[in-house]
Image (cartoon, rainbow, N blue to C red; front, side, top):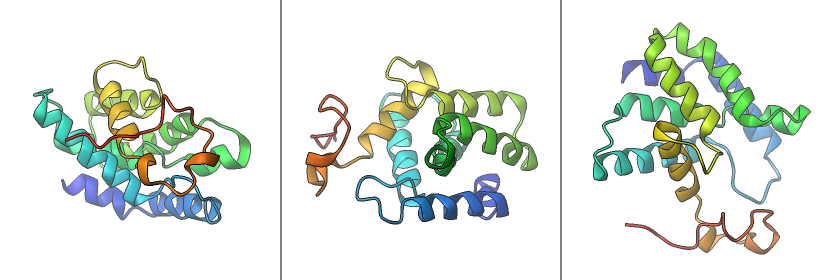
Length: 157
C-alpha cells in the first residue's frame, strides 16, 4: 500500500485535508477528516471480506481517503463534494501511477458514494460511508438535517 501512504503524504492532499478542517472548525455535525476516511475504509474492507465481494484492499482504502477530500469546495462555492473530490483525486491518482482500470473503479466509488441506488463498488462505498456515522451517540442528532432514514441508529456486527 505504498501508493496509499504516498497520497496521505501528498502536498495537495494535505492541503485539502487542512481546508476541510478549517471549513468545519465550528461544525458540530459529522466531520470530513482523516478519522472519517479511515472509518469508511475499514468498514468497507470488512464488508468486502464478509460478503466476499472481491474488491482490492488498496483501492478501497484509496477511495475512502479521497471520497470527501473536496468537501471544503462544497462549503466554499456549492460544488457537490463528490464532484470536487473526484476532480482533486484525478491528478493525485495519476501522480502515484494508479492504472486506468483502478482509476475508473475509484472514480465510481467517489462519484457514487452519496447515491443509495449506486451499484457495485460505489454501493460498497455508500454503505461504508453511512455506517461510519455514529448517529446513535451524536450530541447534535436533533439538529441534524439528515432524515431518520439516513441516520445510523444501529451498530452492525
